[in-house]
Image 1: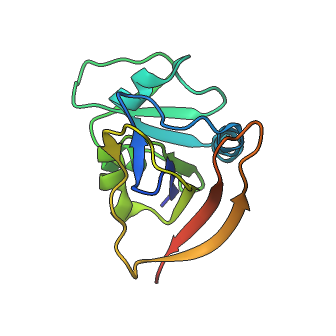
Image 2: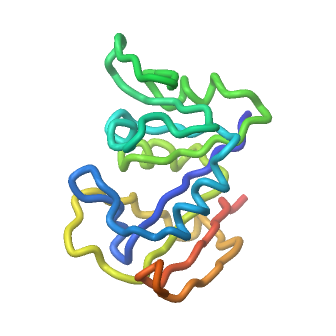
Amino acid sequence: MSRVYIIVAIDRKRAIGFEGKLLFHLPDDMKRFKALTTGNTVIMGRKTFESLPKGALPNRRNIVLTKNPTAKYPEAEVFSSLEKAIENCKTDEKVFIIGGASVYEKALPLVDELCITEIDDFAPNADTFFPTLSTGEWIEKSREEHLADEKNHWTFAFVNYIRKK
């Protein structure tokens, strides 16, 4: 089976979005996202795909999940379920789940690792949240702290978690 990851940026209350947009602009987070996902597969829900400013993410296999059987998205494959999408990935493929909230929730039992950018702040407005993680199910594998600076206006950490065996 493919190696499946979740990649997400969350605030202290697990907020991930507001009105279809990201909550925080962190150039270092965007660089990390690009470095980890380029050359790999990204799976996302329809709303997440439609929120991408330039459509399909370049140099990645883009998979969109939608219940609409006739939906077509430029430079993306379409599947009706997360399970079918993952089944259609090769065993040596790295697969990143990139949102939204309902896709993250469905993916949690299936993923091997979480790549979370933990932002040390609260978004002023949020309407979309990352699911609560089961305590005791995940182990922190690595943490890289970053202080706010002129480009990244919030303190944050890149934190990777692996599932307990």
